[in-house]
Amino acid sequence: MSQLTVNGAQLTYQVAGPENAPLIVVLHGGRGIGDHRSEFEAYRPLTDRFRLVGFDQRGCGRSSLTPPFTFAQLADDVDGVRQAFAGDAPMILIGGSFGGMIALTYALAYPNGLSHLILRGAAPSHDQEIEAIANFKARLHKAPNASIDMIDKLFSDRVTDDIELQLIWFALQPLYYERFDPDAALAATRRLSCHAETHNALYRNKDQYDVRGRLGEIGVPTLAIVGSQDWICPPSQSIAIADGIPSAELFIVEGCNHAVHLEANDQVLARIRAFLG
Image 1 (cartoon, rainbow, N blue to C red):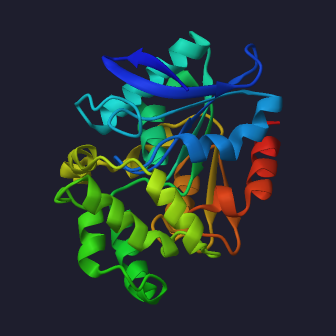
Image 2 (cartoon, helix red, strand yellow; image 1 turned 135 degrees about the vertical axis):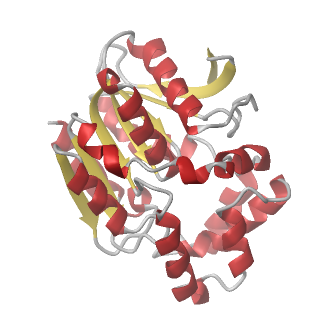
Image 3 (cartoon, rainbow, N blue to C red; image 1 turned 120 degrees about the horizontal axis):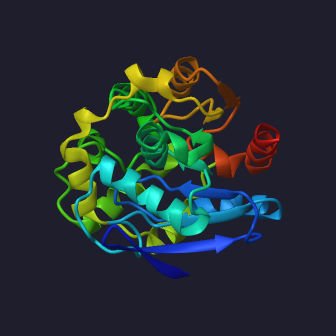
């Protein structure tokens, strides 16, 4: 891994693929939770045709804890990464979960920076939490170590510290997969970087995120991918995105959850390749 200075923050990144190939930038999810590695590996097979860059967003993973932690700042950072690897050329942007929200924010702030937009398990508004909480209550039996207060904290700015955030994440993991492997989840959580400061800051003004009324402004070809069983960003959110963006396509993968890019990796990659032509 290497580091790149963007807008005063040190961003840890990986790059793979032919240097002169079209650039794909992947954005990981989790507000202060996790890093780019899983997302990067899921899309690594695309490096036969594309140059792939994945990076830890500021305040996440191994990147610096450099405020401010806002949607607008993270979108500005994405453009800094694009310029570092593609200059003035547009890029293909893949955003998963919270990374999809940043990708939508970027598409509206930097319309000339994109050739294609791909969203996985994303949402166009903070209102997604209402449906997510209802799904959590209906599926609570799948995560017996989780509680209502934990999910309330996950969607709030009142997480106590990094350890509490990591423990909440582990307790909720059975909800993210239709074929859950507890040993794999334990191993992944041990490697997981959690930054409560970043998480709380990004949730402090969460009500400001709502791009539903502006989706029609996005003019690039867009692909919205979602698992049919996604609990946290349900299919209704991707349907709203596809309905709102004029040149959008919708791909719902049956029998998969929020981690659809991992659970049905071959299907997702095949659909992306077809979308990119």
